[in-house]
Image (cartoon, rainbow, N blue to C red; front, top):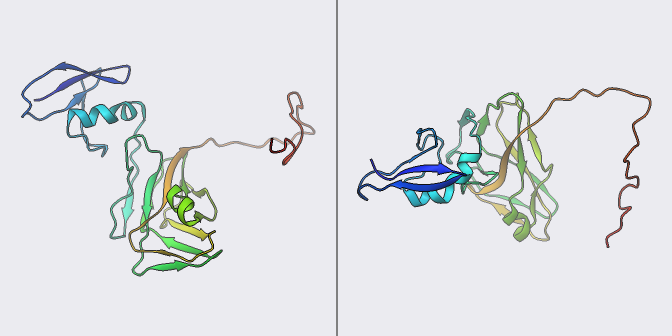
Length: 204
């Protein structure tokens, strides 16, 4: 046994200190041990203290994944991140010229639960520093899709850009969605309609 901690208002409160050489762990308000089953990798009290508040408030969904690439599974870089990094599953570098598109495979196949989608979004660093974006951002992975996830990248800069094997090329964000049914009517309730259209408020 090691540091045993109680959780109150998402803050970790030290309730009992044992030998610093002992294994450390965290328990929730119900006394359940929080282990590394969800892949957050907390090994020490300080690591748990930095990351637990997000982990405790965020529901973790287990999603089956087949990885046919040589890269590691997509994962969050930090606790609290919304997007997992997707990496290029290519044997040789691929150069994308100005205003050209390229479909980059990832080797990742996922089985989404009912009512969920995965959105493929650009990485901010690639967009800001190199003008590389996802052409159909956000790309949508439907819950029934089982094929390999591929990312449509576009080069919006004035210079060619090269994607190397294993590089992080996009983010994958999981979102819950609602199913709707459109009901045809003769007219809409216009109470509260703000009117206007594209650009009607100007830029100032």
